Length: 250
Ligand code: PGA
Image (cartoon, rainbow, N blue to C red):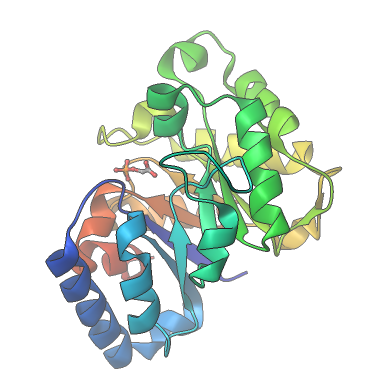
């Protein structure tokens, strides 16, 4: 299975950064096509930069474009929201839904996340659904229960490996430099596969990404762990060298 390396820029960058990043990425890929033969890449910038990146990436079909969130609603009086339809209108391929920062800072719950999945799925956007436990939940031995509930409550009927990827991101590993042990990653990814048989078709093709302080120097261990289908990368996705370094080192 081709692995997916997804960049989650979060609320970072500006116009100049975006232009420079994409020009450099295209240049690096041009010189290292072997990378594209092994990996799919996804870039998820802040909303205002989606359009610029779309144009810059037209010639690179293996580099997909995604948003970091979408509205749970179709359209109308929702000031500040961006609908899934607008994303697909701007030729987005994918959307991250349920990132732990949205759950934590904006109180997003599974019910809202499920509504967002319905919207994104209706627009044929590829969904990157983020799940993961906090440190307290892990220490209390509840990590699997938490992840199971996040999946059970959010997933809808009719999804397939084409239309969704799951990102397992332990909250305590995000942006902290702490990485889960590979045996814990393997166990959780296997657990996730075992728990979504009913909801996701073509399970053998489903990619479950790991996220949380993935960097070039730990990428090989993480990406060679059984059941890991790629990585969702925050901090290290903000430089072309470290972002591509994750693929190059794997
Ligand atoms: P990080 O972020 O790589 O900076 O830990 C990952 C994420 O939040 O998706």
